[in-house]
Length: 309
Image (tube, rainbow, N blue to C red; front, side, top):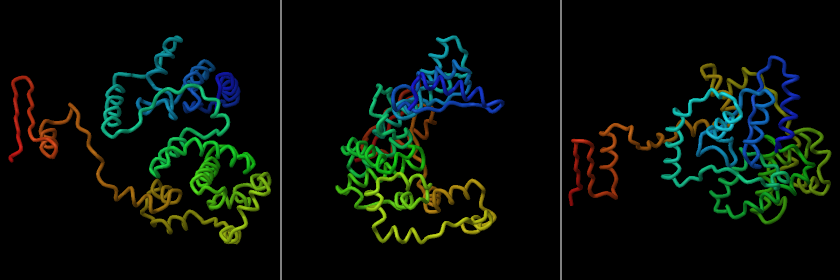
């Protein structure tokens, strides 16, 4: 949501009060201004900025490392970046995107609509992907418009985690069901009950709040007491003393089923390129059922393989 003017003002203010605490700058390119904002904060003294490697850069992600480095050098700075080691990374992911038919990040034009729905960059891509998986990608604009309405009815919660997800999920449900607040998430019910802060429940639209709470599930959640387990109790519940701290946090916040799904996921897909051993290349080519003949030649080496009829 930052503009260059506001980025400059905030960077100066934060640096003046940060003392010895390192300050980093992280921004998404949703409104098309992140590459400009990044230059402004560097001019104000911030020396650690977050970027992405194309084709994962731009779009709703961070600015391109190559663009940022070139612009900083043009301003007289000397970024501590070796682009040569990043080029193969870019080439790899462009090839993966092409093979898998995945979208490629591209610079965005300035869009005033972002200041209406204020959907964060990390959420907008997930929302678009989820709608696509449901065959409802054409509903994206309707969902964004509904987000504006839902946010107003919930009393304008700040559009950061978890409130942005509350608003976005409810807006998508409203559009999918065709009736506003016919189905409501548990989180929105808890929000209306004041479990996510009394201000949220206080500033909600009265009619919407009444509609959200006028259902059996709301009465169930109202009776539930929030638990405050100790670390020992949480560890015992999610795996015992041998569980690493990292996995304990994942199981507690993401849910055991998601962690188990990660552990049982199939092996990652290998993408062939010129750096793979020749034997591996031949092995994969032979396994391709849509090829009847393979011919490889390099310098004085020639290999010809054909499938028997």
